[in-house]
Amino acid sequence: MSLIVSEIFYSLQGEAARAGLPTVFVRLAGCPLRCRWCDSAYAFSGGREMTLAAVLDEVQGYPVRRACVTGGEPLAQAECLDLLTALADSGYDVSLETSGALDIAPVDSRVSRVMDLKAPDSGEEGSNRWENLQLLNAHDEIKFVIASRRDYEWARALIGAHRLDLLCPLLMQPAHGLIEPRELAEWILADALPVRFQMQLHKLLWGNMRGK
Image 1: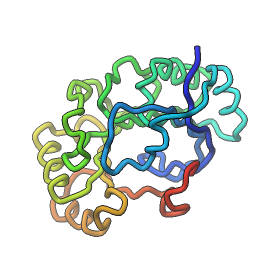
Image 2: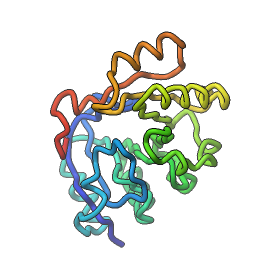
Image 3: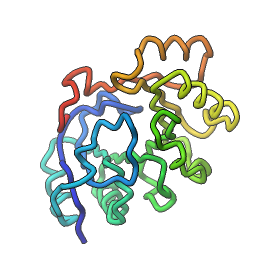
């Protein structure tokens, strides 16, 4: 059993409920989507083939028990499910960052699923797998990346129509370099939208640097 790994690195979690916490990241290579604002396009191809045991060994070399599996789209590799379970079995607090385009049902129940819903300006709105919404629970999170007022209004309507805030915590962040963060913050405040505004902490600290 092997995985194609783009990188394994140690940093602060930059997003979601675990933002600011020291975390080991396993970035798997490959993604079937091509979001216009993607900041990890280097993971679309390449990477190194590693056995599951080798990945676990490298992860365990870092001084924390918190791991995030990301991509690319990690679920595009079937072996990702085994990696998530193995990390949880090893005592890690595990989160998964996924596009929301693939089935999240097989993911180990101990894993926190941070799932995107792709807004129109991503270019991948049609890739949203709406069946995933029925699988989410309070342990998971939904993330909206907003690149325009159109994206915001789309997300606001979706939240209201489906009461997404009753499913799990909701995250909303500006697409880096495409919208002013303050503008998005003001829209959220004006509507008292039930979301957590977030910016990517790692980019504020290190810029758009690979491995951070």
